Length: 137
Image (cartoon, rainbow, N blue to C red):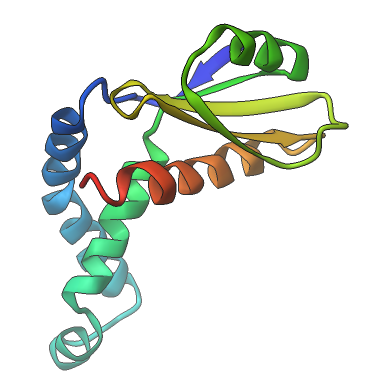
């Protein structure tokens, strides 16, 4: 088993602080992407709303979440030892799993996968954001 990602907030406040700190980064990312797409000032003002920047911040936050990656047996062993509520997406008949634990919510989300680790990690991060963090941040 190994871990990918930069953080797993221990508290709701830590999650909010990280999310808030990503605001300027999201604005910079959106500005640079629109510059690369050759938006002029009028097009930028017309197309880039606060919702666009918020979506960038959501994606940045989710992409940094710590995710555990292991075999299905390792995940099952972890799951049996935890008291957290665990939501699992995917098939029971595959060999691998990814999962994110949010201690402050006493909750975890997991996904199973066969071969495409990177896709499973990315999908799980989006699910974790939507199921656990969206309401918190």
